[in-house]
Image 1 (cartoon, helix red, strand yellow):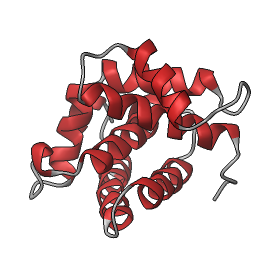
Image 2 (spheres, rainbow, N blue to C red):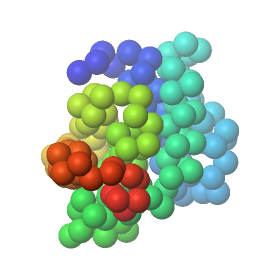
Image 3 (spheres, one colour):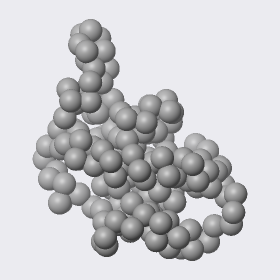
Image 4 (cartoon, rainbow, N blue to C red):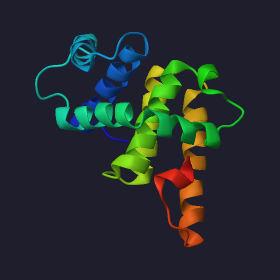
Length: 155
């Protein structure tokens, strides 16, 4: 696990707060980012803002596909029944694993579990870990089977 002051970890926390914000309002990303920065009491340089923006934009632009992946990985949990924090953590991690591909899968999962522990309830980290494990397992199975792995094959 990275230190709580690692700019990349803080960037994910800021992305989590920003995406969570627009779940309850019109998606004004700049306003949500400003409010989230104030909420987390961030100073300039505390967060990797490029990473935060990449995550927020990536989740926004791929929301339907990400939610479809979540539904396939956790079919017994409809999207509207998943805790909002857990949902946002999953969306961020799935963006990073499937679409962003800028960090190893294990790093994305570790970061997601840490965010779930920090912001979620007692069972959030286990739920998030299980869903992400299922997503990664599906990716690995398709790689072994020499299937062409596309985003559409996960959805």
